[in-house]
Image (cartoon, rainbow, N blue to C red; front, side, top):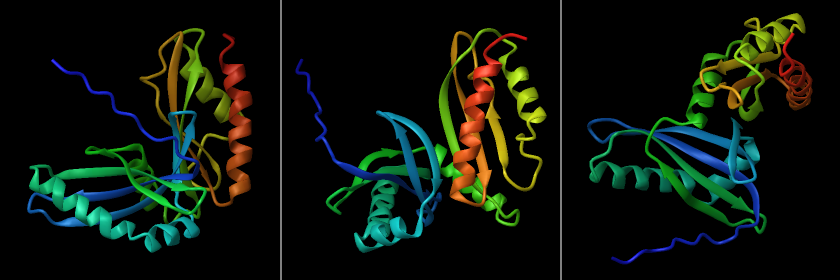
Amino acid sequence: HEEELLVQPLFHVAQSFSGHLLIDRAGGLTLLGLQATANNGFSFAGSATAPVWLERAAGRAGYPELLVALGKILFAAGYHGQVCVDSLLLEDGRTVPVLEINARSSMGLLNLKLAESLADRGVRPCLRVRQVGLDDGGFTARLLGALRNARLLWPGHGAGIMPLASGTLVPPRGRLFYALLAAEDAEFEALESSLDDLLAAARRPM
C-alpha cells in the first residue's frame, strides 16, 4: 500500500474568490456569479458580492469559460447540482482558476441568494462566520437580545445584522453564522465592530 502526499504551492494572494454554477439534470449549465472570499488564516471567514474590478479580472482570465468547461466535465462524470469553485487572484496578476471544487451548496451561494432576495431593499449582504467562545446555553438568547436592544438586529430594511444559525453554538465553543446588511463599505466595518462588543458582553451570563 502506497501513500501519497499532496502539496499545494504557497501562493501570494491578492484576493480569494469563488465561482458558482448550477448543472441541471439534462446537463444545462447556469453561471450564477462570483463572490469575494474572506479567510482567517486557512479557514473560511465569509463571502461578499464580488467588486467590479474582480469580475473584470476574472473575465480577462477566461474564468467564465473555464466554469462552463468544468461543469461539462462534472456532468460527464455523473454529477448535477450546485457547484462552487474556489479560486485565487495573485499579487502578480495571475489567476489560479481552480484551487478546490465543492460539488454542493456553499456559503458563497447562500450569499448570492441573499443578494437576490434583497435586491429591492437597498442593501447588500456580507456573509460571515466566526468562532465564538461560549459560557452556557443561554448565549444565543442573550446575543439576540443585545442585538435587538442596540437596534442592530436587521428589521427588514436599512443596515443591520442577521443571525443565520444557532445550532452550531454549543458550549464551550461554536461557530456563529451571520450576515451584515448595508449599502456602503464603511457600514460593514461599523457593524462588525459593534458585533465584537456585543459578543464580548453576551459571553458573560447575565
